[in-house]
Image 1: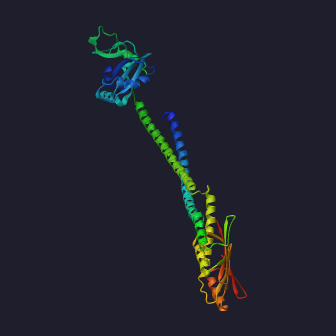
Image 2 (image 1 turned 120 degrees about the vertical axis):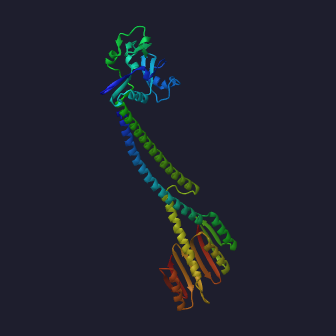
Image 3 (image 1 turned 60 degrees about the vertical axis):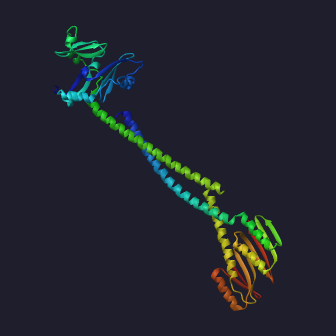
Length: 293
Length: 129
């Protein structure tokens, strides 16, 4: 039972331990290999691993299921909310050879640096020291559980999530920007294709300019044709005829022989319906009209 | 959160802000370019149609040949991008046929001078190539 904030040192029953000699330098490298090293040796559970370096190429690997451990401790009547940190006996013997009394029935011994819990009757000689001496010492930094760590672990998970969301957001933005750039490039390419296909000038300004010019030509040519057709539709009477029709630039000048003044007025009215800026003149019998298209 | 992760997060956030601004600007720019392209396409297509109408060399050749088939011109001159036809004595019928061809074609008439001399008609026409 504990009645205040406490650290727990677990006896070997709560974890699995294996000593390995590997040709690596650092503990984290061994930690990566731990699941493979313990493969087939552990029961079902959510195991984590801790690595203690004992010598240059010698490591002690601890495998533990922290949820199971906490459950077990709870079932033993220990208030887990009061637990600050949990250590393993293995990490606290620090590779020393030990022989300690745990309680009336059990003792702790080590073999080749691995701490084991055995019934006292298995010892050749009753150990002289008990475990309290070990527990009085300052504990190592090799805890396998920390209350603060759980909170920190949660914060760390949240921080990682935020980080990943940010990375996702950045990636999405990059993708969208790249997509838009691609669309712009496609537009530019389409433009180039049209210019090449129809042999057009390269700039929009030139294209617009050419179009304006040709539209003016189109308008003017339509006007000429309509004007001459219109003149041709005027019903001439006997002895009446067109003497000349001259078109140059925007000026249309034509002369006509008509039968008398009334006919000239009729003709002028007819012309007025189509043309503006009319200049009229009579030279002998010829009625000359000049209009601007 | 460790300090390193905090710095990374702040950097990413700033990057997001900058990218968002760029994204908005590029999108605006794309909208403008789409609009500009639509205008360009329309203008280009109009120009192409106008060129096909008024700058079709085959049409010019065809018109000139048809006119000459009706009556051989007294003068035919090529001068500085202009083709000049001069007919001195056309009958009414030939004149009307030539005029019909000219007025129904898409050749660019620069100058036209028609004079009646009794029963004959003279026609001077300058066509811009």
